[in-house]
Length: 438
Image (cartoon, rainbow, N blue to C red):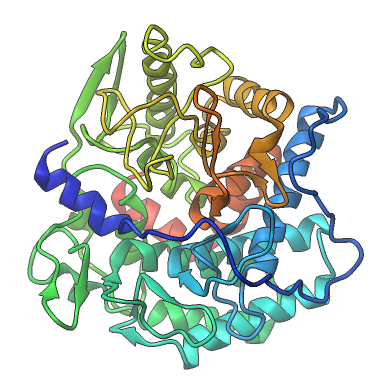
């Protein structure tokens, strides 16, 4: 990875170093008995279930993370937490909160908890974001304290993480037929000053800090960026020109006969995140069918992992997948093709989980294999962030955005619920039409 591209991804996720142990137990919130308890890594394999039941187990467990590891007052969701369920850390991320708001929609629809409590949590979260959480021209700091909303360390005002939040906000606006929720969500979205984040250029800056101003790196090469441009083009209050859709390059890669648009040095999640909310199925613009593009990217990634079998014998047709995640050596940005990062045989469940809609049978085979053959990889909140079958290392944590992309794509695979809900936003439909996605 080039120094410039490494700086790109360090800006994106910041290599936070956390302790693997929490000194204090996080108190469980008072919740209805309908909330399922998923235990902590039983040594016995789970009983056989259908694919739909299996995905439901994943979603139920992940929902617990977004419910328990968020402030009941602010609604801000932790960036990460101990997979066993007790955690005293207070660092939240605005992106994890966006996934969490969408998880609350799913949980309400699926009956994972008391409906009134879930709706109340959504309203409280949106009220805090609208009226108390610090914003700069409508954009939010990447990392904040879950209890106060205060900026954490030197965190940046982030264009992509604000966009992830807004996707969750707009999902709630369409799902909950509640005047307060809809009004707050509209307020949060409409106040974003998208042209400001362009900073005089054609492509969006990655962010801004009060100490140094705009980050010089821009969202100018294909990645998870599509949501930023579509949200900005669809804005009715502070839009950017439709020509912004042409402001990022779309380089192609051919690997084992598969040709697709990608960022030539980037993890698999770049092909997943925008697709969690925006429904690109059966739609193309003058450049590509982006859904099919992610199908090819997922298939290429599987082939890439299998090509490493001589080095890492654990990689098999039903055990593959690496993307930006924890590792035994800390947080890393890794993937391929081409090979990127210190690949060591680790498996990251959200690589397959986030691609469930693109290669369902292959990804289900991976997740089922992990669940049945590696019981320590399944804890209270579902899959741990990563593990290494060769060394016996299991991550003690789950990460909000990694658990979130798995949950949302599992629901999309089951019912298209997130897609259908989010795409009912007129701004999303208008953005698609404006950029020629038809």
